[in-house]
Image (cartoon, rainbow, N blue to C red; front, side, top):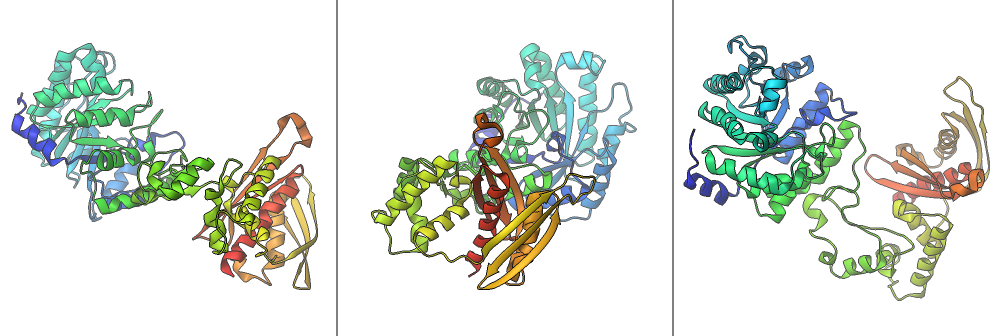
Length: 533
């Protein structure tokens, strides 16, 4: 065993360089509902390289043919900032290292790093591997030494290390000693069950850092909601590598979220994780990965979430307008996010004045019209409107109050026929509109009444406003506002739209779901026409 050299520790800490290993493609792919294609994985690697992640753990070629094909493609791909790691495991009990399947699958791949998972918990060795404690140590030694001689930098993932240390600290350290003496580049301590508290992680990691003259890493799962905090405490204890996933993807409750960890380590602790100029790409990376994973972004995520810099209370939004750092721990632009001042019944004048001034710069917070708009906002929210999720409808409301709104068309009549059947197009909408004195009557079929109305309205308007062909409805939400009223309850409809560049949300409220949907739909189309004219 190599005893820890005090100079090495001092150098590691003083450099304040934290190596980031991303396991989104390996651990993250085990998330319920995620299934990355090979093309998805290539795109994710490009995005992580763009962010400046040091090591990308791309997968396990022994476990599935998809990853085998991926590594073939990666052999011809050049990355600017990142290195690729392949994931594997120690040789099987009593097997020949030269012919062992898991080891052979990774030994000759053209990658710089190999992550090797090894058993550290005596309970697992005897009850899962069904072998002896001594044979397990030989398996670790043989595998790490063999791959090191092949020129690989071996990251030894010490599986269930914290469980192992708590139950049998002597054997836990022997597994690390075996990997270290065989030439491991890094000893990564895994809280595989996500069961340990940050103070426990700190205490045990400190002992490992003091004992071994090898880089120490941390790999935490989030089963107790402490993966990020535990990872930070491991770094405070001397760990120089942090493993995690984008958006915290991973099996069960997920892994440590790199979108929280990286800015915490770099912006709050002053450590060097990624190129500072790349920090502004963090929100983009988070949203891109959620899009590829086909999962909704977590709006409450620190730093990168939609709500991370959203302010609703009047006192808060007023303070933000005067001194942003009064309610924001960093400027949202640092991580590529943006501030939102949410429109609601608790909003003050400061929350709405910027929107009003963007339409009419002559109006200030003390103008009578500002008070009137604020009063209208509170009245509308009492009726069931919620403009914090439909800012575009709120802008239209302000324009109407300022007499700076001219409708682009007038509805004369519409009818929706909904006939459940085996056909996909089971609804039909007929619409009659007026545009500057010219009437247009159209009809369209759709998958449900809202889809039929959308198609019919577009069909009627495209002759007058061809640009609305760019608009796509990206989301449709309905909420019953008073369930006690049963079928007479009001409903709130929020429609999200996009033209491929800009995104906006509009709202409609009514006891009639068709009417509420129509109002939200009209606002969506009119908002596009407003920003283009």
